[in-house]
Amino acid sequence: MIEDLLRRDSAKIGVTLQLEELKALIDFIALIVKWNRITNLVGSSSPDDLVSKHIVDCLAAVPYFESARLVDVGSGAGFPGIVIAILRPETQVFLVERSARKSRFLRQVAIELGLGNVEVVAERIEHWHPQVAIDCIICRGYSSLRKFYDDTRSLHARGVRLVAMKGLLSDAEVAELGLNPSAVAVQALDVPGWDHRHLVTIKVEA
Image (cartoon, rainbow, N blue to C red):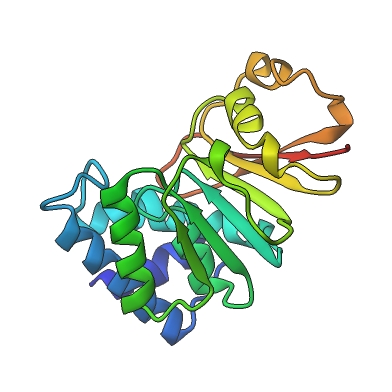
């Protein structure tokens, strides 16, 4: 049933899942359901809700992430980082999550799904200093755009992209960044079950 739901909803957003991707996503959902009984990963962990409220939303954004090394800030239950890692095995994905319990969950997911391209970082993003250059920094439901930008400053280098997955977006929140308008792009996404979904891309210019 979950496989059918994943196939149906992913098709609605123009994403065709391969069999190994479907299996990995289904196993990911099963792990969230199991761990959510003792660790508050998500509000509702019914398989249907996980597909409609989380997995498909992340799948809609995956085509916009073409990076060699990507950081998911405040990864939580692994959205969107784990989904990206499944569909982009060539991308090195760093999941930055300060909660010890959630970071343990993320490590277990990487082990059980065999995601060799995932590294879990159990600390605050402001304190992390990677040894490799980062291409893209992403977040989903992290905070305001301004806070996302400020908290990741230590990773900013010319050409790095910051991408925030947002719901209803105000002009005031974008303006609060105080950046050159040419450095900020907003892309509306059509996601089944969501009224408003946007990707805000910020290009670091210096």
